[in-house]
Amino acid sequence: MILECVGAPGGVMRDYEADRPYMGFGKFLSKLASRQSLAATHQEISRSLPVDMTEHTEWAVENVSGGAPKIALESYEELISQVGAAAEQHRTFYVLNIPQTAAFRRRAGLYGTGDEADARVIFEEIRRAAAWARNLGAVDSVSALDESRAAALIRSLQDPSCLLYTSPSPRD
Image (cartoon, rainbow, N blue to C red; front, side, top):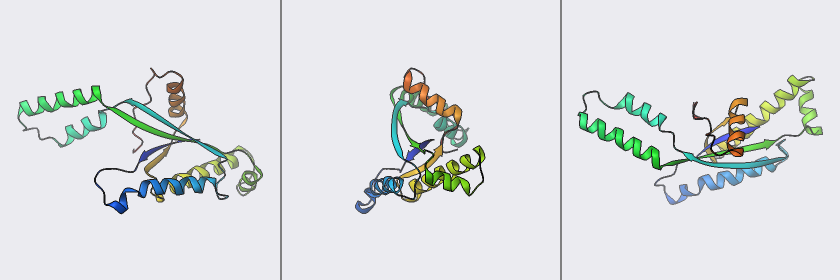
């Protein structure tokens, strides 16, 4: 299963707050390695991509006054275009390997037998890992990739000229 994580926001912080995301990430990794987790291994994938200005452009359309001076709107449009051409965004993903171990089979047995029981165990494990990441302060948000988004990620890794999906946003 693949999770997309959006990092904890940075910026100006008090000294005691600056290390919180790093400590949270260490605690998250510790939880993944604990007996509570069915994940046998995990792998981080980081991608740097051209920035997608869609979300910002939509915000500007909804929040900029229609009565704003034309020159200000044109200047802002030019700024968005220039930033979009020069900036990049960073996407972080975690691939969790959840093998069918004896512990997995025991948990699946609680839900019955077959693929539905297995899927329920995987769903619960992914939900648990996402909650650990958020609640321990390692990340701001986490979302599991569906089949099409996972396929787009894998394709972009094999052929970097193929862009990752740009919509929907992981925060949706």
